Image (cartoon, rainbow, N blue to C red; front, side):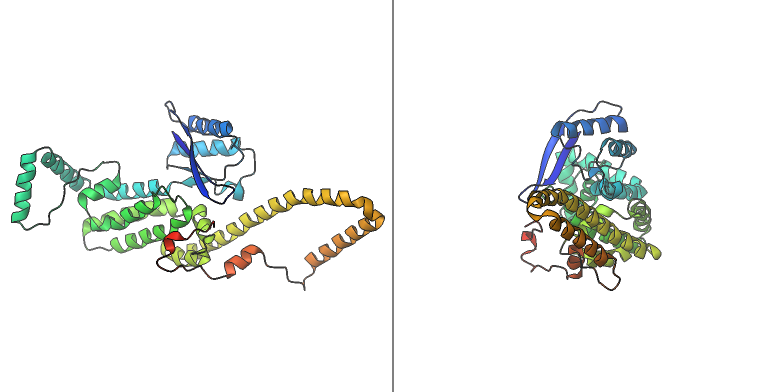
Length: 349
């Protein structure tokens, strides 16, 4: 098991470090997986600093997450709703593998044919000569890895799989593992599946319909991490949510999931406000204590009077509350980069 930690350092630079690479003895149960993860966190003193954990989609991983939630003592953000993140690359792999099962016999025939040809130089030469006679384009024969759908795509070069290859290349990028880039790719998958499910080719249509079912299974419920990351990206904000959710969801689910994302990001913001306020309250109290010897009873009277006035302001119906930083941020338009500067944009700078 490889455990990688992603974090933002004190200089606002995105970092990642492998904090453990260890053998987990079978059976790979949720208990053993959670123990191995939590022990690594304890060794590094990170047990109370974990925000989210990303794992492949498997029942034992789901069990491990439930155990980890109980083991971590501090309050989890959003009540733990964003603690478990399902690996998007793995979901896409399951999605496409499920669709490819519809043409399993075709794939197996192609795979065995490629095996037969590439094991003999004479056969490859003869195959090349026949391809020239039929005026077919010259292509290198590639043998796939059956468990990796993008390797199967390379073997088949099927047009329907192109968008999935592009999405996998984006999501699997090792230099930018940030969740804000996922939603712009995910909604495109659903759009392609909707289109291909009506394809005249029966094989393509059957594959797309089966993948749509799998898509709705994994993304039928709103992915809070993906959506919140998009909302906090100056490029996208709520604009992308409002644009993409009607393509992913249907009917009343669109408005319901948009509202859930909106409410969740405000809940998350308020949690940070409470933490910030409480951490600064102690500093303010210590400063007040230091200065109380100079103010006497009059200082205490002013403090009580100011507190009563502040309470009045909070309760007064005719006084509008000040906008929060989040309100101001969301009301601003999205950030637009010039075409040649997109790759240089860094929201942390």
